[in-house]
Image (cartoon, rainbow, N blue to C red; front, side, top):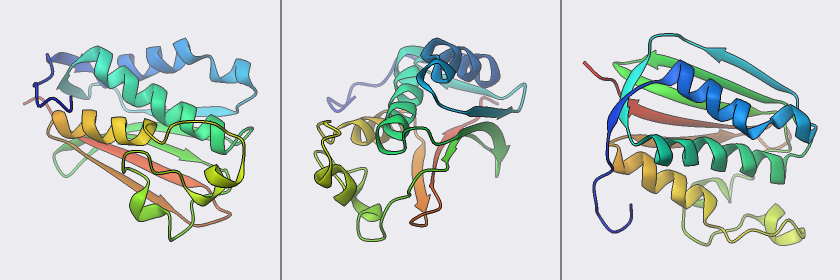
Length: 157
């Protein structure tokens, strides 16, 4: 995606797609409490493998930095766009780290302080994929209250 090559897109029903991607991840088997609020009938044009990587990277990031925290996944529409949202109940992201978490090789303070591993590429890959689909990615967090990641994608007309 960083090569500038456009993703191969096909219509995807986000409810079915996100549910299947989360089922494949088996988050509950990893000790994570997971809940879903998935709106049916939300269709986007996307590369299925790339979009699955977005879900995987977001889930794995939460598993790494908020082990045992609840992951609340939702799919919905707002302002003429589709959204995939992950909210976790983990420790959150510091205010100084938040503006930088989508930068390549950036590892926040908690990541630098622990032996969590990782290259600092997971969220940068998420941003690259979402932007290649003419979308945007947002993160919000209050330290001690978890983090929220929202990928916004254009709806199929």
